[in-house]
Image 1 (cartoon, rainbow, N blue to C red):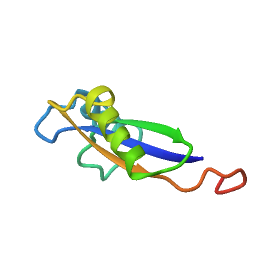
Image 2 (tube, rainbow, N blue to C red; image 1 turned 30 degrees about the vertical axis):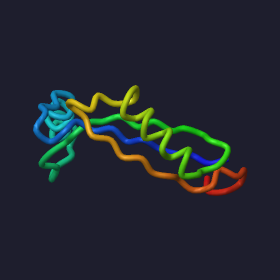
Image 3 (cartoon, rainbow, N blue to C red; image 1 turned 135 degrees about the vertical axis):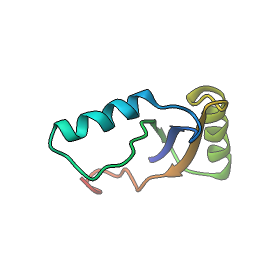
Image 4 (cartoon, rainbow, N blue to C red; image 1 turned 180 degrees about the vertical axis):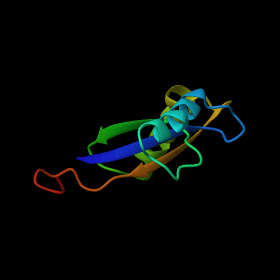
Length: 88
């Protein structure tokens, strides 16, 4: 099995109220040095194998269902092997 990940983030010109709320909370919790926070979404899709066709299909999923291309950008990448015992 393989894992294909789709990361979705608001476009830079789009306001991110959730990111602003997190940015405001960090100092109150004792964390400093963060100047900007953008909050997005992550989708993990398990597929039997990664092929160019599968990646094209995931790109299509990301564009039509997983993101709103008007206000969000997305990136598709393949994660490491999901074999039991690999990683942790």
